[in-house]
Image (cartoon, rainbow, N blue to C red; front, side):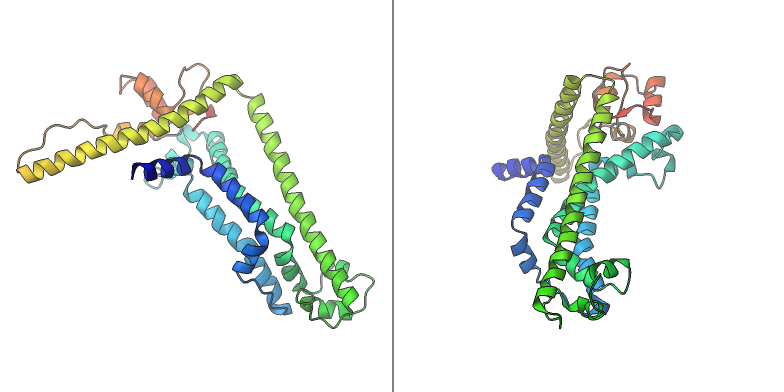
Length: 309
C-alpha cells in the first residue's frame, strides 16, 4: 500500500512530464490509436466537415478541460470568488490577475496543442473535414486547373470512392495531407517560438538570479510534498481523537488546528517581492507572527509582483 502511495505521489508530482511522454507515445502510435477510435469519414458533403472537425477538436477541448481541472493555481484563485469577487483581482490589481489567468490558460493549452499537432501531422481528420467544405476559396485552390467534377467528387476523395481518375484522386489526397502537415508543423513552430520568447522575457525581467529561481522551485515542490505529509498526519490524528471520544463517550481533548483565516491566507497565490525574503505564501505567513499586523493584512489583500505559485 505504501509503495502504491509513493507511486501515486510520484505520478502526481510529475504529471506534466508524464503528460508530455504520453503525447509522445500518441505521436509514435497514432495509426493504432486512430484505428482504435474507428474513425471512418462518411464521404458526404453535408457530414464530412462536422465529422472531421469533431474528431480534430473534440479531444482538444476535453484535454483543455482536464488541464484546467487539475490546475491547482486556478482553484487557488477561483475558490470563493463568487462570495468575494474582489478575490480575483485584489486591490484592483488587474494586471496581476491577467498574468495568473494567462499562465493558467497557457499551461492548460499544452496538451490540446500537442494533440492538434499530432492529428494534423497525420492528416486523416483534416482530409475529411476540408473535403466536406462547400465552394469556397480553399476548395477552389485544391481543384485549381481541374474540371468541375473535382469539386463535386471531392467529398469522396478521402474514401478513394470518387469517380476521378486514380492519379488525380491520389494527387488530391497528397495535397490535402500536405496542407494538414504544414498546419501541424506551423502550430509546433509557433508554439515553440512563443514559449521561448515567453521564457526569455520572464527571465529577463526576473528580480532574482537564475539560481535563486531554481532554489524557489525546489523549495516550492518540497513544501508541497511536506504539506501533504503533515496534512495526512494531522488528519489521521484528528480522526483518531474524534473516534476515541465517540467510543469512550468522553469529551475530546483539545486539538490545535489553523483557523479559517489562516487557511485563507496560505491559500492565496504568492507574489514575490525583492524587498521580502520569502519563497512562498506559507513561509510568509509563518514568519509574520502577528496575525493582525498591517503587513499581514496587506498580504491578504495581495500586491503586485512576480507570481510564484
